[in-house]
Length: 295
Image (cartoon, rainbow, N blue to C red):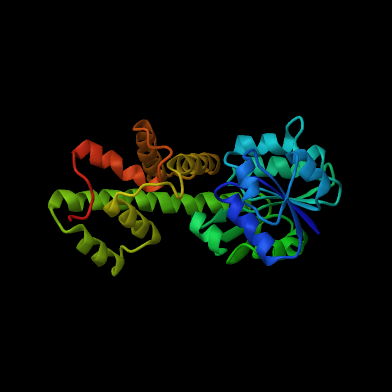
Protein backbone atom coordinates (compact mmCIF):
# COMPACT_ATOMS: atom_id res chain seq x y z
CA UNK A 1 0.00 0.00 0.00
CA UNK A 2 1.18 3.51 -0.77
CA UNK A 3 0.64 6.00 2.06
CA UNK A 4 0.72 9.77 1.67
CA UNK A 5 1.48 12.11 4.56
CA UNK A 6 0.79 15.83 4.20
CA UNK A 7 2.09 18.09 6.96
CA UNK A 8 5.24 16.63 8.52
CA UNK A 9 6.05 19.33 11.05
CA UNK A 10 6.42 19.09 14.83
CA UNK A 11 3.70 16.45 15.24
CA UNK A 12 3.27 15.10 11.72
CA UNK A 13 6.98 14.47 11.22
CA UNK A 14 7.44 12.06 14.16
CA UNK A 15 4.19 10.25 13.31
CA UNK A 16 5.27 9.86 9.70
CA UNK A 17 8.71 8.59 10.69
CA UNK A 18 7.13 5.95 12.91
CA UNK A 19 5.02 4.72 9.99
CA UNK A 20 8.20 4.44 7.91
CA UNK A 21 10.00 2.66 10.76
CA UNK A 22 7.22 0.28 11.76
CA UNK A 23 5.58 -0.73 8.47
CA UNK A 24 6.63 -1.90 5.03
CA UNK A 25 4.41 0.61 3.22
CA UNK A 26 5.80 3.03 0.68
CA UNK A 27 5.40 6.55 2.10
CA UNK A 28 5.17 9.78 0.09
CA UNK A 29 5.33 13.09 1.97
CA UNK A 30 4.61 16.73 1.31
CA UNK A 31 5.20 19.82 3.42
CA UNK A 32 5.72 23.47 2.58
CA UNK A 33 9.04 23.19 4.45
CA UNK A 34 11.55 21.16 2.39
CA UNK A 35 13.65 20.45 5.51
CA UNK A 36 10.67 18.79 7.16
CA UNK A 37 10.30 16.47 4.18
CA UNK A 38 14.01 15.71 4.16
CA UNK A 39 13.79 14.72 7.85
CA UNK A 40 11.42 11.87 6.92
CA UNK A 41 14.25 9.59 5.88
CA UNK A 42 13.03 6.71 3.76
CA UNK A 43 10.02 8.58 2.36
CA UNK A 44 9.59 9.90 -1.16
CA UNK A 45 9.23 13.69 -1.41
CA UNK A 46 6.01 14.57 -3.23
CA UNK A 47 5.91 17.50 -5.65
CA UNK A 48 2.70 18.85 -4.12
CA UNK A 49 -0.18 17.86 -1.87
CA UNK A 50 -2.24 17.19 -4.99
CA UNK A 51 0.44 14.87 -6.39
CA UNK A 52 0.55 12.93 -3.11
CA UNK A 53 -3.24 12.60 -3.10
CA UNK A 54 -3.30 11.33 -6.68
CA UNK A 55 -0.61 8.73 -6.07
CA UNK A 56 -1.64 7.19 -2.75
CA UNK A 57 -4.18 4.70 -1.41
CA UNK A 58 -4.34 6.33 2.03
CA UNK A 59 -3.57 9.99 2.71
CA UNK A 60 -2.91 11.29 6.22
CA UNK A 61 -2.91 15.01 6.96
CA UNK A 62 -1.63 16.82 10.06
CA UNK A 63 -2.29 20.56 9.83
CA UNK A 64 -2.65 23.32 12.44
CA UNK A 65 -6.07 24.96 11.95
CA UNK A 66 -9.57 23.92 10.80
CA UNK A 67 -9.52 26.55 8.04
CA UNK A 68 -6.17 25.24 6.80
CA UNK A 69 -7.47 21.66 6.82
CA UNK A 70 -10.62 22.62 4.94
CA UNK A 71 -8.64 24.56 2.32
CA UNK A 72 -6.15 21.71 1.91
CA UNK A 73 -8.93 19.18 1.37
CA UNK A 74 -11.71 21.10 -0.40
CA UNK A 75 -9.90 24.11 -1.87
CA UNK A 76 -9.60 24.78 -5.59
CA UNK A 77 -6.68 22.37 -5.90
CA UNK A 78 -7.36 20.48 -2.69
CA UNK A 79 -6.58 16.82 -2.18
CA UNK A 80 -10.25 15.79 -2.54
CA UNK A 81 -10.14 16.67 -6.23
CA UNK A 82 -7.19 14.31 -6.78
CA UNK A 83 -8.02 11.28 -4.64
CA UNK A 84 -9.35 8.22 -6.41
CA UNK A 85 -12.63 6.51 -5.47
CA UNK A 86 -11.94 3.78 -2.92
CA UNK A 87 -9.08 5.64 -1.25
CA UNK A 88 -9.09 6.94 2.34
CA UNK A 89 -8.30 10.29 3.93
CA UNK A 90 -7.24 10.31 7.61
CA UNK A 91 -7.23 13.72 9.27
CA UNK A 92 -4.94 13.76 12.31
CA UNK A 93 -5.53 17.46 12.99
CA UNK A 94 -7.51 18.91 15.89
CA UNK A 95 -10.67 20.10 14.22
CA UNK A 96 -14.17 21.35 14.90
CA UNK A 97 -16.69 18.46 14.74
CA UNK A 98 -18.74 20.41 12.19
CA UNK A 99 -15.70 20.87 9.94
CA UNK A 100 -14.89 17.15 10.11
CA UNK A 101 -18.48 16.32 9.17
CA UNK A 102 -18.39 18.70 6.19
CA UNK A 103 -15.19 17.11 4.92
CA UNK A 104 -16.64 13.63 5.38
CA UNK A 105 -19.79 14.49 3.42
CA UNK A 106 -17.87 16.15 0.58
CA UNK A 107 -15.41 13.27 0.26
CA UNK A 108 -18.23 10.71 0.26
CA UNK A 109 -19.65 12.26 -2.93
CA UNK A 110 -16.33 11.39 -4.59
CA UNK A 111 -16.23 7.83 -3.28
CA UNK A 112 -13.45 8.65 -0.80
CA UNK A 113 -13.75 7.38 2.79
CA UNK A 114 -12.62 9.47 5.74
CA UNK A 115 -11.51 9.00 9.32
CA UNK A 116 -10.96 11.90 11.69
CA UNK A 117 -8.20 10.85 14.04
CA UNK A 118 -6.95 13.64 16.32
CA UNK A 119 -4.06 12.70 18.57
CA UNK A 120 -3.09 13.49 22.16
CA UNK A 121 0.24 13.31 23.95
CA UNK A 122 2.41 16.07 22.52
CA UNK A 123 5.65 15.96 20.58
CA UNK A 124 7.56 13.67 22.96
CA UNK A 125 4.93 10.96 22.72
CA UNK A 126 4.62 11.43 18.97
CA UNK A 127 8.35 10.72 18.79
CA UNK A 128 8.23 7.57 20.92
CA UNK A 129 5.00 6.34 19.32
CA UNK A 130 2.90 6.35 22.50
CA UNK A 131 0.28 8.97 21.56
CA UNK A 132 -3.43 8.25 21.92
CA UNK A 133 -5.57 8.48 18.78
CA UNK A 134 -9.33 9.03 19.05
CA UNK A 135 -11.02 8.02 15.80
CA UNK A 136 -14.36 9.00 14.32
CA UNK A 137 -15.65 7.20 11.24
CA UNK A 138 -17.35 4.10 9.88
CA UNK A 139 -16.41 0.94 11.76
CA UNK A 140 -15.28 -0.96 8.65
CA UNK A 141 -13.03 1.89 7.50
CA UNK A 142 -11.56 2.12 10.99
CA UNK A 143 -10.90 -1.64 11.11
CA UNK A 144 -9.10 -1.53 7.77
CA UNK A 145 -6.87 1.41 8.76
CA UNK A 146 -6.24 0.47 12.38
CA UNK A 147 -2.85 -1.20 11.64
CA UNK A 148 -1.55 2.03 10.08
CA UNK A 149 -2.77 4.09 13.04
CA UNK A 150 -1.33 1.58 15.51
CA UNK A 151 2.10 1.87 13.85
CA UNK A 152 2.62 5.32 15.39
CA UNK A 153 0.55 5.24 18.58
CA UNK A 154 0.14 3.57 21.95
CA UNK A 155 -3.68 3.48 21.93
CA UNK A 156 -6.22 3.73 19.10
CA UNK A 157 -9.81 4.23 20.25
CA UNK A 158 -12.81 4.21 17.93
CA UNK A 159 -15.21 6.69 19.53
CA UNK A 160 -18.06 6.66 17.00
CA UNK A 161 -19.08 8.49 13.83
CA UNK A 162 -17.15 11.33 12.20
CA UNK A 163 -17.40 14.29 14.57
CA UNK A 164 -16.95 12.22 17.71
CA UNK A 165 -13.16 12.10 17.38
CA UNK A 166 -13.01 15.90 17.41
CA UNK A 167 -15.51 16.00 20.26
CA UNK A 168 -13.35 13.68 22.38
CA UNK A 169 -10.19 15.66 21.59
CA UNK A 170 -11.69 19.04 22.43
CA UNK A 171 -13.11 17.83 25.73
CA UNK A 172 -9.78 16.21 26.65
CA UNK A 173 -7.86 19.39 25.87
CA UNK A 174 -10.33 21.59 27.73
CA UNK A 175 -9.83 19.43 30.82
CA UNK A 176 -6.05 19.54 30.44
CA UNK A 177 -5.79 23.31 29.95
CA UNK A 178 -8.34 24.20 32.63
CA UNK A 179 -6.37 21.98 35.02
CA UNK A 180 -3.17 23.69 33.92
CA UNK A 181 -4.67 27.13 34.55
CA UNK A 182 -5.60 26.04 38.08
CA UNK A 183 -2.06 24.69 38.56
CA UNK A 184 -0.66 28.10 37.61
CA UNK A 185 -2.98 29.76 40.12
CA UNK A 186 -1.96 27.33 42.87
CA UNK A 187 1.75 27.79 42.24
CA UNK A 188 1.41 31.56 42.41
CA UNK A 189 -0.48 31.28 45.69
CA UNK A 190 2.48 29.25 46.92
CA UNK A 191 4.96 31.92 45.75
CA UNK A 192 2.99 34.67 47.46
CA UNK A 193 2.72 32.65 50.68
CA UNK A 194 6.47 31.92 50.69
CA UNK A 195 6.36 28.10 50.59
CA UNK A 196 9.23 26.15 49.03
CA UNK A 197 7.82 25.41 45.57
CA UNK A 198 9.80 22.20 45.22
CA UNK A 199 8.24 20.90 48.42
CA UNK A 200 4.79 22.08 47.31
CA UNK A 201 5.18 20.20 44.04
CA UNK A 202 6.29 17.08 45.90
CA UNK A 203 3.22 17.27 48.18
CA UNK A 204 0.75 17.77 45.34
CA UNK A 205 2.23 15.05 43.12
CA UNK A 206 1.87 12.58 45.99
CA UNK A 207 -1.64 13.72 46.86
CA UNK A 208 -5.11 14.17 45.43
CA UNK A 209 -4.17 17.29 43.44
CA UNK A 210 -1.77 15.36 41.22
CA UNK A 211 -2.23 15.42 37.45
CA UNK A 212 -0.23 15.38 34.24
CA UNK A 213 -1.12 19.06 33.77
CA UNK A 214 0.20 19.99 37.22
CA UNK A 215 3.40 18.02 36.57
CA UNK A 216 3.91 19.79 33.25
CA UNK A 217 3.20 23.24 34.69
CA UNK A 218 5.48 22.64 37.68
CA UNK A 219 8.35 21.25 35.60
CA UNK A 220 8.24 24.14 33.15
CA UNK A 221 7.58 26.99 35.58
CA UNK A 222 10.08 26.01 38.25
CA UNK A 223 12.88 25.81 35.67
CA UNK A 224 11.70 28.80 33.62
CA UNK A 225 11.87 26.73 30.42
CA UNK A 226 8.91 27.65 28.20
CA UNK A 227 10.28 26.44 24.86
CA UNK A 228 7.21 25.17 23.05
CA UNK A 229 6.29 21.52 23.20
CA UNK A 230 2.63 22.44 22.71
CA UNK A 231 2.38 26.08 21.64
CA UNK A 232 0.11 28.39 23.59
CA UNK A 233 -1.43 29.59 20.30
CA UNK A 234 -2.53 26.03 19.52
CA UNK A 235 -3.96 25.58 23.01
CA UNK A 236 -5.92 28.82 22.53
CA UNK A 237 -7.28 27.46 19.24
CA UNK A 238 -8.34 24.17 20.85
CA UNK A 239 -10.04 25.88 23.80
CA UNK A 240 -11.84 28.26 21.46
CA UNK A 241 -13.17 25.26 19.53
CA UNK A 242 -14.20 23.63 22.82
CA UNK A 243 -16.14 26.74 23.78
CA UNK A 244 -17.79 26.69 20.35
CA UNK A 245 -18.82 23.09 21.05
CA UNK A 246 -20.22 24.14 24.44
CA UNK A 247 -22.28 26.81 22.68
CA UNK A 248 -23.56 24.32 20.11
CA UNK A 249 -24.54 21.78 22.76
CA UNK A 250 -25.95 24.31 25.22
CA UNK A 251 -23.63 23.20 28.04
CA UNK A 252 -22.42 25.92 30.45
CA UNK A 253 -18.61 26.00 30.49
CA UNK A 254 -17.38 28.52 33.07
CA UNK A 255 -14.12 26.65 33.74
CA UNK A 256 -13.26 26.33 30.06
CA UNK A 257 -14.11 30.00 29.51
CA UNK A 258 -11.84 31.07 32.38
CA UNK A 259 -8.93 29.06 30.99
CA UNK A 260 -9.53 30.49 27.52
CA UNK A 261 -9.45 34.03 28.89
CA UNK A 262 -6.15 33.32 30.68
CA UNK A 263 -4.70 32.16 27.35
CA UNK A 264 -6.01 35.29 25.66
CA UNK A 265 -4.19 37.42 28.22
CA UNK A 266 -1.00 35.39 27.71
CA UNK A 267 -1.24 35.94 23.96
CA UNK A 268 -1.66 39.65 24.69
CA UNK A 269 1.72 39.47 26.44
CA UNK A 270 3.25 38.04 23.26
CA UNK A 271 3.49 34.45 24.51
CA UNK A 272 1.62 32.70 21.71
CA UNK A 273 4.70 30.91 20.39
CA UNK A 274 5.82 29.79 23.85
CA UNK A 275 4.73 26.58 25.53
CA UNK A 276 1.16 26.55 26.83
CA UNK A 277 2.50 26.44 30.39
CA UNK A 278 3.70 30.03 29.84
CA UNK A 279 0.14 31.04 30.78
CA UNK A 280 1.55 31.34 34.33
CA UNK A 281 3.39 34.49 33.19
CA UNK A 282 0.07 36.36 33.29
CA UNK A 283 0.08 35.91 37.08
CA UNK A 284 3.81 36.57 37.32
CA UNK A 285 3.55 39.87 35.46
CA UNK A 286 0.49 40.97 37.43
CA UNK A 287 2.06 40.18 40.81
CA UNK A 288 5.70 40.98 40.09
CA UNK A 289 6.67 37.46 41.28
CA UNK A 290 8.14 34.38 39.60
CA UNK A 291 7.37 30.73 40.25
CA UNK A 292 10.97 29.46 40.20
CA UNK A 293 13.00 27.19 42.42
CA UNK A 294 15.33 29.16 44.67
CA UNK A 295 18.99 28.44 43.91
